[in-house]
Amino acid sequence: MLGMTKAKFKILDGKDGMKLKVSALLGSATVPCEFNPESFTIERSVNYVQHQIPGSDRPILQYVGGGAEIMQFSLLFDTYSTGIESENSEVTVSAAAPDAKKADVRMYTEPLMKLTAVNSDTHTPSLVEFVWGTISFKGYVQSVSQRFTMFNMFGKPVRAVVDISLISNKADNNVRNSPDRTKARTISEGDRMCNFAYAEYGDCGEWRRIAVENNIDNPRRLHFGMDIVIPPIL
View 1: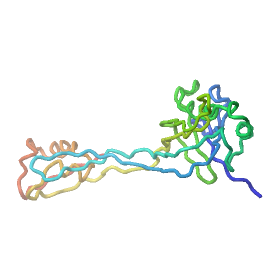
View 2: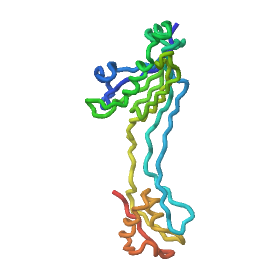
View 3: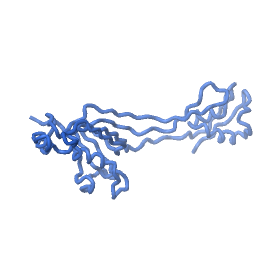
View 4: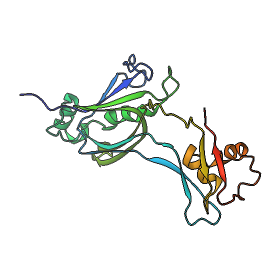
């Protein structure tokens, strides 16, 4: 019978995706999880700037850029009692030991805390990959928080929950084209130069390009029926 697939962190080389040599901080190229997470979330956000136009009832939204994917989950570590998922023999020994000899759970949570430490070779925290069966998420540890929930009679922590947030290092490999053709537009009532700039270039600040091309000194004085040229961005 096949055993349960265990989640773990692999420490990676940020350039080639190859394993680093044995880490001076962690003593290993992998950090195992005692228990698999019960759940995890992956979220991604996009950023917009709101441009307020005088006399307009709504701002013009300008897309600035997308944010990186964020993965968040919690991990349980327990040296007081062994769960059915545990494959760590040292934890098993600790669970069978008298209360006074229970192992300090920080022995197993501290390697996760050290994933935020600066790597001496790359001068940044190490690139890691969270692997659990078919699940793989590469990036950097954004935050780690330990919450100790059980102690022995001497105040030694024997159970902890570690909340982890990973930020993806996935690169943007999409090729985008800029407007490459000259276009003609006719001014309608209520039109503004910044509206044209946003519609054609995605940037309200590019209204000056249109103004210069059409010899317009005051972009607020556009005449109804006036024809203008929208120059290309090459």
